[in-house]
Length: 103
Image (cartoon, rainbow, N blue to C red):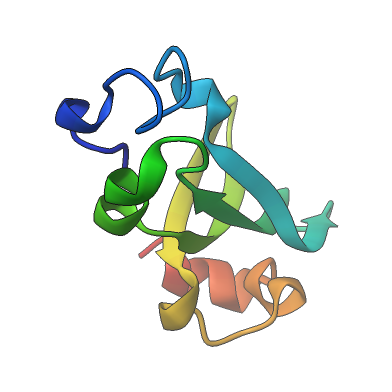
């Protein structure tokens, strides 16, 4: 979720170019890979750093869990807000959990 363009004004309200690449993103909780289920899971933390207090208030911070699985030649994924994620990353890549996540 990116801030409304109204927040992309010259400093001091945002970074110099309003570049989405300047949003902060960190991996959280490490990552887990399962060869048996051809899947992986990791957590990420996003924040609108450098866009000023209005953007930080509007967009806020997000903690998200990503679960990917291979289906033939393609990959599919689910993005789950961390507050709705009730298992460990290791559990998320089990066949049983993947069936629930990708139903």
